[in-house]
Image 1 (tube, one colour):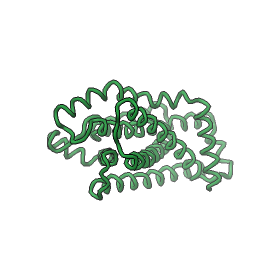
Image 2 (tube, rainbow, N blue to C red):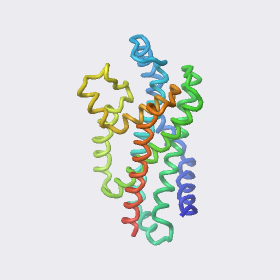
Image 3 (cartoon, helix red, strand yellow):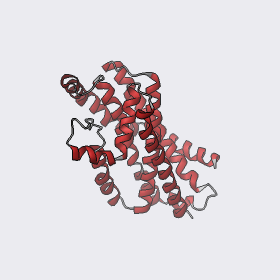
Image 4 (cartoon, rainbow, N blue to C red):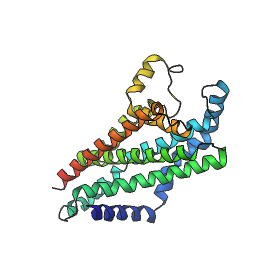
Length: 254
């Protein structure tokens, strides 16, 4: 299975490297937020005293979480293209492990999201004097990797279940927008700033806890209280998503 996973991973990475334009397009949205929205948000946070750390320590980890959230959620389109062109059908007659078909793809997607996140962090360091500890940045990149792994698995499973280029993006947009707004990616949702009902709803959103642990990592808070909930949430989501994706691939390629 490891060899099969490596072969699928290498195939997808080779395809991505041969057409790096898509990687640059994928990073464009967080870059626009970083340069055109970041200075306004950071100045507001600092001027109003809404954050006890520099505003870039609040925005940058949120942007890499946003990159994983949106970039990895739409990878199912490539699988729909493979399905229409008969690639999925041909894979059924190969001896390759069905689980490896998923793992090779999601590992390639997660690595691409991590590299894109590194680029955003480097730009924040160079242009905006981000002052995050190296250990915190490395931990946040690991969380981004797991988050991308989770969302890519769900995206492939959903694409194989729906098998429709019309229903797939419509359902994704319906789910992703409330997840984005309730995660506190754009503005932190705190008990003192948000209305109580909004704060309560945001606590139900698992991605809110992932964004929180990203921010805590950037500020160098490695206490159990700061890291436990978000770390457990992202690990549980990754296990469940890979299980769902693997089951779907095994069923579709049986």
